[in-house]
Length: 208
Ligand code: SF4
Image (tube, rainbow, N blue to C red; front, side, top):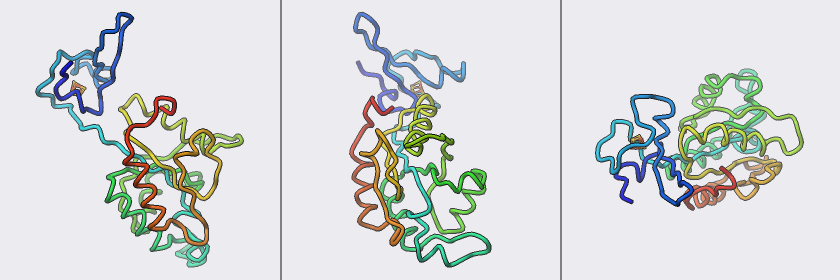
């Protein structure tokens, strides 16, 4: 089946009926009646087309951007990020086009907009999509990330994601973790490993 623009659109979802026929569901159509839920294929022009390339970096701060050394270089009342770790993260974002979702416990004290301003003040160039919610249970960071993925998958497919954290509690998402250390924060070598994960291809159905 030739679907035209829908082939590579972030809003498409494949639906197969009991007889094995394949349909394209337009997720825009679920939210906005201006778009048909089941577009007539092939779609050759569409104002809603957005290329499917969303990659996500789930980002912790302490131990990733804030290191043992930079934590003592105070700026006002807050710790500051290590410039080398920021440089490694900016390199990763530039290489992959990935967007940031903040998992750090700093999100408990700051709003999403304050987090964006804080990251800008540290020199982070990535675009912050949002922050994860809070789960109070063992292995909660992994559960918080999974909950964010579950909540956002209806808005469009996620091509890939990686988790940057100095803690191991990622549960079933552990294969996506690049574990950093508080002594150095994110290194260029670890950023390269993260790049490999982000560019490896589609996320497994069991994850999303
Ligand atoms: S936004 Fe347009 S191109 Fe994308 S899935 Fe919907 S109808 Fe297709």
